[in-house]
Length: 623
Image 1 (tube, rainbow, N blue to C red):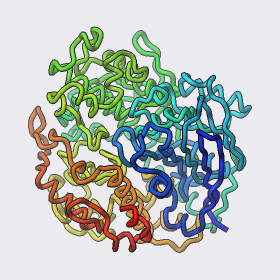
Image 2: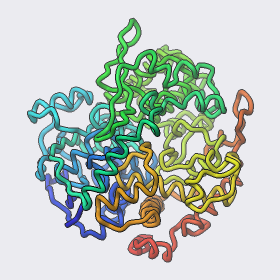
Image 3: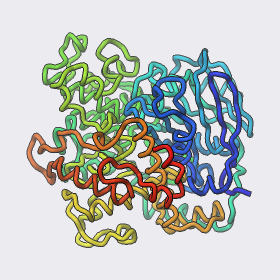
Image 4: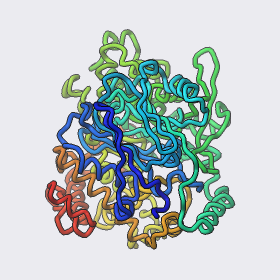
């Protein structure tokens, strides 16, 4: 009997209303482990890659992993994927909270959705059963109103939801999917795809009865983290992901004013410590996690009213609406965060879109006539909040254009706006500047989802006199400066990135301080498989290679594995621990990365031999 999984994948056709169940063999589960593996498999095998991302034939896939929904720290993650309306290629995002756990406990490891409902619907999954129900009465609601209404309708406050707000309904290209109000699967525009299908929400309710292979070993690991997390992750509990903001600022690595600079004069006002000491009212967490790193803020004053029900901003949100927009007011940042969670917008892309508009405004490409009198300049906190609100509603011609994302908006605004688009493959940068970390820049360029930090590489560990032991255990022994691209750096990026993807496949939070050996022990205890670090690295690489294949079939390739030209310039305020990334050197190392992955050096097409080695030889037939 399969351990650690429900053993069923739900398939829903919204056009016909048909609901069926896929039951895959154990080899399928071991080959892919969940998350990104399930998503890539179904996108490649059951969808024409040429489909319109916002058309009915796009798939929308919600996937748990081997660890999801089991009572151990880090098991609250799940993934959602599709063809991205933002990049036109592989789209995937991770989310925390409780929905993923509830979905598996309700009897399913994944949900594969196709088609479009004639009218709004929601999917109700409970105790192994599933049904589509009308959702016309929910359409137009914020996520809070939607959750309250459905929990009352279903008669259970413990029902968990993944859902969209009006931003997803209005097809903002960077709309996201929200779990439990406070947890966003932020990137890739998955919320717009959900809205295009007239799917308002998926509600799940189950029982925690997923079996594990070695219950005693599993409990031993779970208890170990409960006893030891304070020694290893107290900072995450105390100040959250925003706790490192000031450190980034001091070394010149805090994205500022649309990545024009790496230091922000108002940084001290928006740190995790400042949040803790001013507007923080509580801390929450995800399923079975003792660390409780999620912020909860509350504000009621003459300017801003922020409801704690939506949680509070993490580092990426603080950076996007704060330093990147030149805003040093945590109240304004928190309000923008609340709006995005209520309307289901990715805070990274929304903040980057506002920053793009601010730079266009200061350059005269957008005028007060366009903004309706709004002084949309860097540092104007009320203007940032108002523009965010308009994006959520697609209110007015300018917001309607910006809702398409900076890359599309720049084409309408003209060539002078192109340098202000800080994105890869159309997806705006997260809050980490690669001019200080060239390995991370390579990661942005070759990421199948566009610029992404979660399956990326932090150069600092390799820049030490003696590389971190975690790198050495992956076979990387030579120190390399953070602002250098070289074969050692590419090899380190490849190994680390493949491991970062493993967390996604497993449905596991990468902020939990497990060692790799402990993660291997965890997967063994859950599944009964005698897995190894080597096998898990192959799982990560397999998923990346399948995502790469999907992008190639969508028309994305070598030409798209590049960085915006701003990354080849110095900071506007002067050089601070940074070095521009030479496009030619980047290009050379992209080729080297292709070869190390077993892809051809010219176009990054996976070779037949590498596909066979990864046990996905069938992918060669697609290419």
